[in-house]
View 1 (tube, helix red, strand yellow):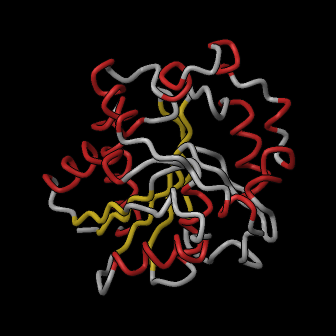
View 2: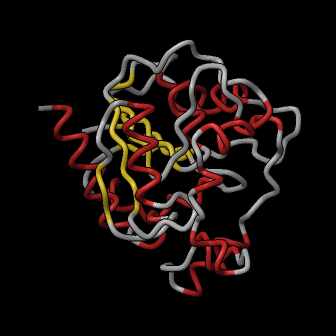
Length: 223
């Protein structure tokens, strides 16, 4: 069985993963869902990675999963622990020396015209359009102000960690449009993204399907 290390996105909390965590645990896996210090202005990327590495402890058979801004932290973790697999879910893919602030322009995201622009910036319309209303409201109740500190720092690795990497995009994502994401992943990672239906937060809208994907990735790696 694998140990899934689940890293949330900007301004979020470990609760985001609770439905996926329950499903993976029912399959016999171990799960470490981490609360990053998102609202702490003194915490940067190094502190984010420290938080995750500390939570992992001496666990093994690691599958590190990063969602959205978690894509900046997950590879830093893989550079410090013996991970079997890195999985990015609707995630940012940084380049060496690139800050999160520069990432948007460098990847051409600004020209991608995210569908969220058509919805007047409503958090539910952009981030949770396919999440049940009650669950989306609960998710918003956990939201924190995301500090700009980790976005202002250059990503510190000189190269992508030497860990097998998979990318899972969501076809109806209003934050990272699918066609733009396909190109970004191909150019930055040299791989073809896997795809599933749904919006930017599949751990809430399609937790069973996402758990199925993660379970399959772990099984393929073990094989």
